[in-house]
Amino acid sequence: MQIITPHYIFMRDRVSTNLSVAFNKTIKKIAPFDELIEEYPDAKVTTLRENSLLMPGLINAHVHIEFSANKTELSYGDFMGWLYSVIENREELIGGCDSICMSKAINAMLESGITTFGAISSHGMDLEACGNAAQNVVYFNELIGSQAMMADTLFGDFLSRLDASKTVKREGFYPAVAIHSPYSVHPVLVKKALQMVKNEDLKLTAHFMESQAERDWLDSSDGDFKEFFENLLKQSASVCDSKEFLEYFDGHNALLTHAVQANNEELEHIAKHQHTIIHCPISNRLLGNPTLNIKELNEKNIRWIVATDGLSSNYKLDLFEEMKMSLFMHSDAPLLEFAKALIDGVTIHAAQALGLNTGEIKEGKNADMLVLDLDAEPTKELAIHLILHRYNISKVYINGKLEKDN
Image 1 (cartoon, rainbow, N blue to C red):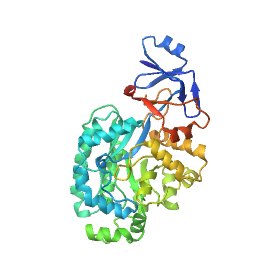
Image 2 (cartoon, helix red, strand yellow):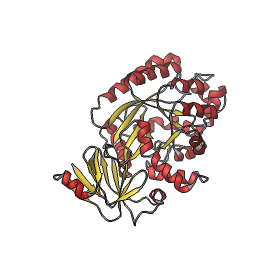
Image 3 (cartoon, rainbow, N blue to C red):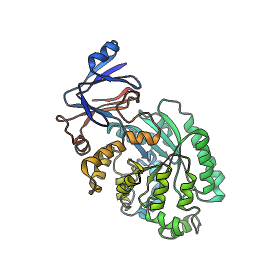
Image 4 (cartoon, helix red, strand yellow):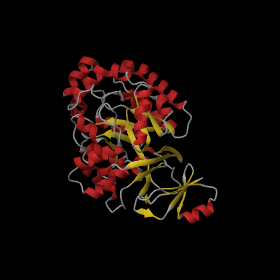
C-alpha cells in the first residue's frame, strides 16, 4: 500500500486540496493524510512539492507503432499523395523501425503522461514492444483486404496475429480487433471478424470516413480512389458502402477513427448504436482532411475522444500537443468548456470507450496517475492551462507502480 499527498488533486468536477490518496493497483481511499495513515500504518508515504497536481494518466486510444520510423519520408497536405507515399516507402519504413525504434516511441508516450494506448497493429511486428511496454495496451490486430479471392489467406494471417497477441500474459494487455476501413475490407472478412469479437468479447475499432476519396468511392465507386483501386487491386467498384459497413457493427461498441466525412445519416446511426469517434486533429490537418465537427457530435450526443494517430501522420505522440492543436482548430468552441471536454477525451471518456477501469482519480479506479509540477495555485481555468503550458510531469504511476520519477 502507498499513500501519496499532492498539493492538489484534479477530480472530474473540482480540484481538491488537503487530501491524500491510498493505493496499490487501485485507488483504495481518498481522504486526509491522518485518516489514511491510521488506516494503513505500514504504507509507503510520498509527500509532493508545493503546487504539485495529481491527475489521471492519459489514454491514447489510436496509434500506429509500426510506422514510428517516419519523420520526413512521407508526403503531407493531400490524402492521396500521402497514401501513395506510404505505399512507395512502406517496406523502408517498416523495415527501418525495429523493436528499439518502436520502444522509443512507446517510451516517448510514457514521458508525455500516456499510461494507456491502443496500438493498431497491421503486421504484428510491434507485439514484442507493446508486450513489454510499461503502459496498459489495447492491442488492435488489424484486418485488411478487399479482394474476395484473397479472403481466406488474409483472414488466416489475421487469426495468426490475433492468436500471437493472446500469448502475452501480463497485467494491462488486451488483445483486440481492428477492421481497417469500409473501403479496404471485404464484407466476408468483416462479418467473420465481428463474430469473433462477439464470441470472445474483444474490443473493436475501425477507421471511418477519413477522406473525400473514401466518401466518393463508397458513395459512387468514383473519385480519387477509382484509379487507385483499378490500378493496384484491379477493382472497379467498392465492395461495401458506408451504411452496410455501419450495420455490421450494430450490437458492438466500436471506436471509429476520424469520421470527418461522415454525413448526417451515418452520425445518426453512430449515435443510436453508441459508438465512439476518435478525433485526430493533427493527422487530419497533415493529410489535407477536414476538421471534425465536434459541435455536431455534441448535439447528437456522440461520445468523442482524442488520439494522436501514428508517426506516419504526426510529428510526435503527445496528447497535450494534440489537445492544444484541437483547442486552436475549433476556434468557435467555448474555450474553457472545450478544454475540459478535451481532457475528458484523453482520460475518462477514453477509458469508457475502451472499457477500462481507469481515467479518473476516484476510489476503485486503477491507479494510473500523473504528477504535474504547476507554477502556482490552479485557477478555475486549470483545464486551459494544462493544455497550453505543458507542465513538467515528474511522476507517472501505472496500475500503482511508479514508472517515471524525476
